[in-house]
Length: 289
Image (tube, rainbow, N blue to C red):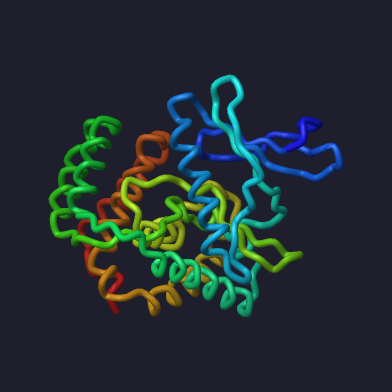
């Protein structure tokens, strides 16, 4: 990366890391993601490596990720630079999409899931143990009045199977998929390291928006009626694709996905989150047709 770079502006992000837009001496734009702390350096490096792996091994036709351009340290903080993509996140894209475009978006989401599922990493992990460890960690970060619900989830996690690990984005929400109108490509952004790598986690992250409607908190002015109809269209397409190996465990994955938000949520969000978590813990078969 050229030393002749110019800061343009800060970009909005939700990971805690700084995200800045720069231009080079020849006016090419790039994005720099900077670790939130020295202790977070190793995690951001893993996230960069995951992004590089996807670009080199899983990019296909219209599905890719911004190319990583370089990395380094500044004042002890790890950073990496990547292509700047001008595009809409899928929440914005879906809100204005036609029926034809909704069909295309649905097919793309299913293709992303298929790419991850087919990229096996070779390690077999016991999900029950992984979930138990994660829930023990969460128990130190949530209000005491939520421990009972967490304990209920921990009991349900005992039925989770062993699985072979696969590629996993780690935070595959609709906001973390960008659509570039000029290239007609979909870009995955904001990869996240996960406590276990398996594509089931990314299905649950998608359903964080598609089923739990978490996107409403970031888009309070959105037309919920119109958006709900379009989101349901996509949901039905995904349900037809999902296999019975995942469906019996969907509610458990949804519950832990939402519980992981709790330590970072405001008190105003607690009722919404706890209601969704409780409903998932008490309705294991709601996705099975």
